[in-house]
Image (cartoon, rainbow, N blue to C red; front, side):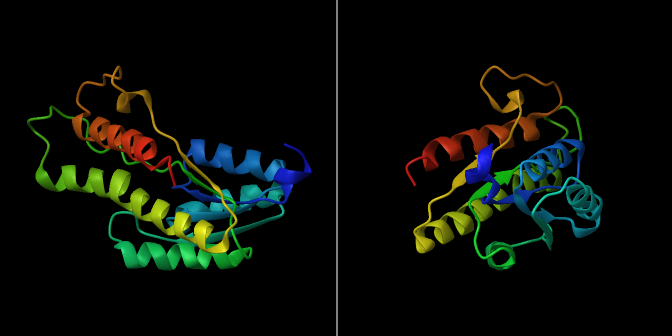
Length: 179
């Protein structure tokens, strides 16, 4: 990645799963500083692993993706921004798969939870970080990781809510590309 990237600060929204851990440790090995946002307890082990990889720094900011509102997300992004005096990128790799079940069996609560965690909270995060990029006149990168199920050719029986939410993220990224 080189020295230019080694100075960049990354914000990773994660739950401490294997994919987010792999992304975090790889970025740390390339000298990136990381702010991990999500479940503080789940991210503690990831933060320790990042430290062992020799990253320039790591911080954890707690955020409940299911229970937060836009003000809570904005406050979390503000705390993350202050950890390393600014950010250069936002990487969202947190998704909630939910219960795998027939689409006619999904409860309203389960559907709402899936959409809240996978679409609404990431949208709030993107808005908050993009506004800070604009205000700082620094620019920055926004990356959303999803799965093929969110694309038009992705089929995963029993995952209607999950697939719908990831399809929404695809469209969010496409329609936000002009920022």
